[in-house]
Image (cartoon, rainbow, N blue to C red):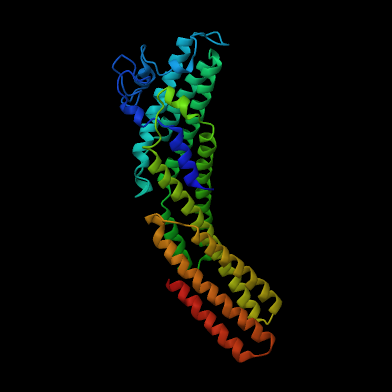
Length: 358
């Protein structure tokens, strides 16, 4: 998927509330009571919920005529509940923007209270549910946009929390250590564990993408759930890291499986079981091609991955060369040219040695 498309969509939507933490008095989130940050400046929930104030106009555009619409509540009450939700979502957006700015340099340094943050989002959702009971059609449309924003923020919260626990450099280092010790089963298990985490992170990004597509920017602006611009660089870094993690783990998995195919092929060549050797070499060739494709898809690799990427490309190059030598040995063996077969086997072993030296 194209992460940059997702990021641009969020930026256009003006979804998160980073800038809402510095709104001037008189804005919808600030009101006339002096609480100008829409909830971002207070750490207690009451301060956040009250961020709209009595005189604020943040929810006034969500109701055209002051009537209560289809529900039984008043328009003012519905507007107040919408403002309370916006204040809480603004607060979460501010917190995420601070933590996510660390993602590009060191994701493991990110600290976030996931339970507290998700609880704050749930609180905003409760306010939106209450507002929906007395909402006009126009207010209901605003509520749906805010619900989509809540889903984006919840998905990003889970993503940041997950990336903060994944030491990708350390995990890939453990894989290399296992390979160097000849323990390919352990290496494969560790790669697949890291791949599972990358897939989980990718799922959070996908959830945020789908929710972002439901956001109406004008409705967010009308209730002062303002610009996503301040969060966009961190989101770009997070998405780029997830893409690189997926590609690296997929490529590593293919390399390890391909090396197992080479072992199978060499054993078959020793036993002059040429059909079995040919099948194993064909599998290895496909796997190494898949690894090359995965590595080539990584652009501007994050620092936590760059060194491993360079090493992996080196390994893949020598594994492909070893496969080609074994294919020539296979052909020579079928023609009873044992000298050529032996020479090609020696060349293959030399390339396999170079793999471990990468």
